[in-house]
Image (cartoon, rainbow, N blue to C red; front, side, top):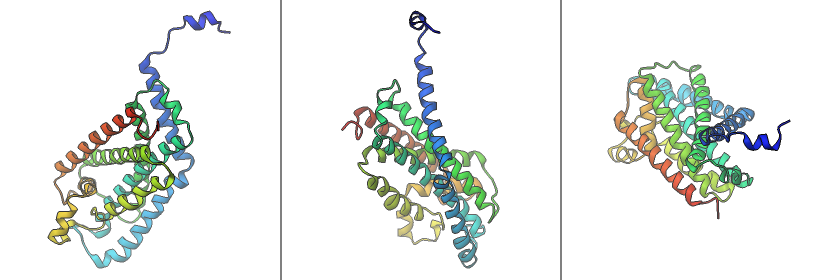
Length: 270
């Protein structure tokens, strides 16, 4: 049995190790939650996208015809995958972090030796995990309906990671300010869903009137979806370099905002 003297003489854990353990614990907890309730976190998106492929791709796609030089179902597949990724990355973080506030166990993190940037990173990593898992599931579903060529694998990986991280950070900011569960659902319902539908998931913006194209270029999701589509099909409605610049800038801006707000205690120490 360890005596009190031996315990006092034991060297303290290095702060970096303590922080790594804390970060890993947050991520593992998020992963376990995602897997434990996979019928709520992964399966619904796979079923929903299967319906999109069957209805839009199968029934309507034959009437729409080729899009961007590709079959309609093949053209919309990257957009449907990316739509699932961004929605689930956002939803995972906003529900998990708000749940920590509501359940009053966020205080344990706030009094721990974990800095704000590490807490934010842990939750964002959890959102990234769910986004990637759902993305893989929807990709598997899409392969049942069409085939996907991979032209630029690094572009695919970069686009999905940056997009998932952006929306995970957005979910974190939403959770900071949310005061009830209704406010958790407002942004996904009234902001994300319309932006996704008007972000070029089901069509090329080249088909729109000039005024509609101009408006579409202010939609950040258009750049994310087209960068991802470029990785698969090699075609894009926007400049891919500009798309990555926008995604990278969004990650930096949102991460900085999240840290500053955490340091100020916005929404968590009121």
